[in-house]
Length: 256
Ligand code: OOG
Ligand code: MG
Image (cartoon, rainbow, N blue to C red; front, side):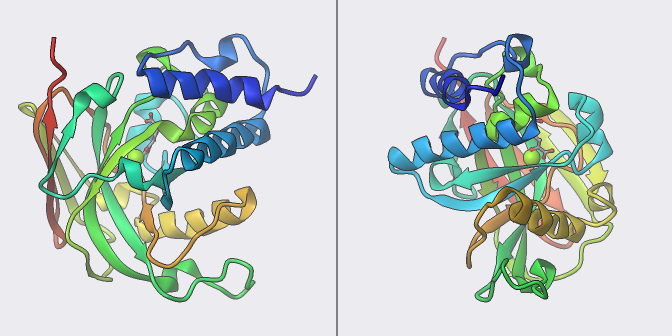
């Protein structure tokens, strides 16, 4: 039997809109990775119908720390919309989320020339800026418990992100990374991201072509977290990437 893409998208879209978790889809439905990307595409269409704009893509599970924390060992790709973006130094109402976590990211910006249809095109030479960033992830699944297919269907837990000041493109193959929030701190290195976060851009190109995701001038590409994510229950979260500077966001705690 083929998976009912619309029915699976219904479950995840209502979890998103009602800010209520849902059990893993894989508990009760059979669907493969192609189905999962089809569910993700349908969810994105619904967001667009509600007025959101696609402004980039995000890579996931590009580091061993993330793979180990979440139990998925495959690289995944999801989409970023304008409604997810929070200004650097800005604040975000955590009541928007079910059980938000925050993680350090490296962001790349796509330059003017991009053509995924050209076989000689190389996205790593088309990015023109790099910045420290953070991602707020908010799995729609209960207790962040999901399979590889589940998390792809759920647009890779994408919920929010903040990009620091864009810097002229420079290599950051082994830059120290630190994220602090709510008295907790995690440190790591950008080398944890596929050996060098620019490799996540190469992977983004490969997966965007395979999954038919557009990549346009000005788009943001998140390379994937170098460390495990931290709970984001309120207060200021800060991420510092050596050589790139810092980025902050304040979380307004949910009212009891
Ligand atoms: C899935 C999202 C993974 C990353 O940076 O590895 C991700 C999750 O952890 O819920 O964004
Ligand atoms: Mg991430």
